[in-house]
Amino acid sequence: MPQQFDFPRSPVPIKLNPKTAYLIMGLLVVLWLASGIFTVAQDEEGVVLRFGKLIEVVQPGLHYHFPSPIEMVSIQSTTKIYREEIGFRTRDSGPPAQYRKVPHEALMLTGGLNIIDVEMVVQYRVSSIVDALFSVRNLGVFDRRAGAGLVHDASETALRQVIGRHAIDEALTEGKVIIQAEIKEQLQELFTKYKCGLTVESVQLQTVGPPQQVDDAFKDVASAKEDRERRVNEARGYQNDIIPKARGEAQKEILKAEGYKVERVRRAQGDADRFLAVFREYKKAPAVTEKRLYLETMESVLPGLKKYIIKSDANGSLLNILNLEGVGRIGKEGQ
Amino acid sequence: MRGVIGILIGFFAVVFAANLVFFQVIEYEQAVVTQFGKVRTVITEPGLYFKLPTPIQKVTTFEKRMLDYDADANSIYTKDKKILILDNYARWRIVDPLLFMQKLRTEREALARLDDIVYSELRKELGQHELVDVVATNRSAIMKLVTERSDVAARQFGISVVDVRVKRADLPPENEAAVFSRMRAERAREAKTYRSEGEEEALKIRAETDLESATIAAEAYETAERTRGEGDAEALGIYASAYRGAEEFFEFTRTLEAYGKALDENTVLVQPLDTDFFKYLQGAR
Image (cartoon, rainbow over all chains, first blue to last red; front, side):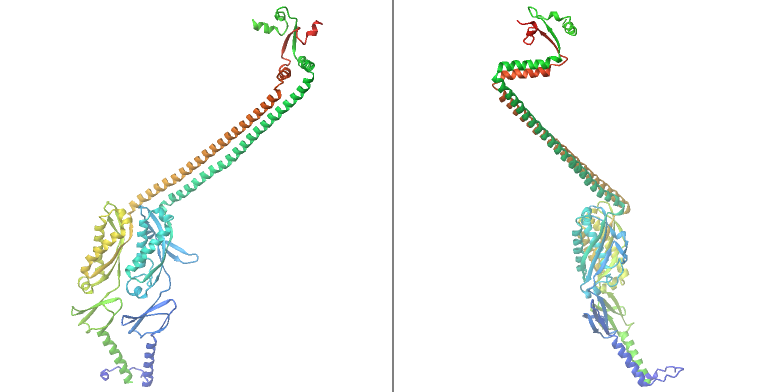
């Protein structure tokens, strides 16, 4: 009974032609219907809900849904690689990129109850938009709030659980790759358990280091390693210096001996040849040669000597030279 | 004109009436319909539903998704009387909306109850493990147990505890300082080891070098002396073979030669006249 409603007359009379009114209403209806047209971009997927119930997952392209409140649509990027940061936040992706450390996330206990400083980046993508939208509240993917949500919690849990199983030295050095793989596996396990429709693409440990409180001690280890190398190198230097010298010295010694040998042999040969030559001649006239050689020797030897020539007495004693100058000493000493 | 207004009014009336009697349950929701406070139906499937207008029938919707519960960090004693600061989270969902509505009504209430349940289970379980166990070896097994027990305890409220996890397990600041000083000591030891190893290696290399150089020198001496000996021997042989059969002449000439070398101006020669050389000084015999 619409006639019973009595609307107050508007001060300005509405001169609305009923036809125009119908036209406007029709236009509104058309606009309402048209509001159901939507596009899904190449990297996206959409879900269509009819009265709240999921009826369709739509792929990229132009689509239509019955307008609100009959149907609703939610479109999210599913090919995009999402990124979760643990232990730090990117303040400005730059360039140059700027980061902020989050110490309470980055510092954690290792297997041997040491404390280590780890920063990690998890990359993941949405593998099921339906699960991602409807199975977990506060997932932390589409409703980004850095440092909150399931993805962040699960990443942190996986990181700490795996780091807790490893010794600090493993994490700092060669174990890094293994640890990354373990974290990835652990995180994927959690995602699967929560049926949240996410797939881990990669886990990267950005910086793994000792906490700053003990950083200098770790650096000293590194410099100790260098010291070790240095000491060894110095010793090798000594070795490289000494051994060639010793070899040279040895070579010199050996060659000197060779020289000696050659000299000895050649000289001997010379001596022998000389002797034999003389001997050959001697044999031709032994007596006179002997005499001649004797006299020649005396001739050359005697001039340089102090000589006392005495007449020997009958028994050949030397008493008669006692008073001779210079020889007296011999006599005195003799007493 | 009237017709137009009529249509509009009719439209809004229909919408208004629809709003009174129809309601949506969205994909991630579940709902309980009560009539004057008494439960009529529990709806777990999404879609459009009909009810009698409020105040006769009322709809209460609940989350169907997995929900989070992030507890504040708590200190917990382990079996070896050490304190661990645990920051844990739990994931839970409302599995029985009816029970949930009767016992808890709101999520706030549920979180308070979860806090009690999870924390007490954690404390109970961690009290039976040593610190190392919790941090390193057994963490996932421990948390699985805690999850299962919390789940059992929470079921009476229409809640299922899906997972309880330790997000962070840290030591209190005092203990941290001890850990840092232990780490320092360990590293200092390591550094010392490296330096000593360097020293060891260097000493070894130097000693080996000295040994090698001594060996080289000694071998050289050996070779040199042998060579000299060979020279001497060969010379000896040459002399011997030259003088064989000429012993007398050799003695004679060699003696003469030796005179030349042995006698000099310091030699005093006392010679009787009746020697061969001076025999002519006495006049002819």
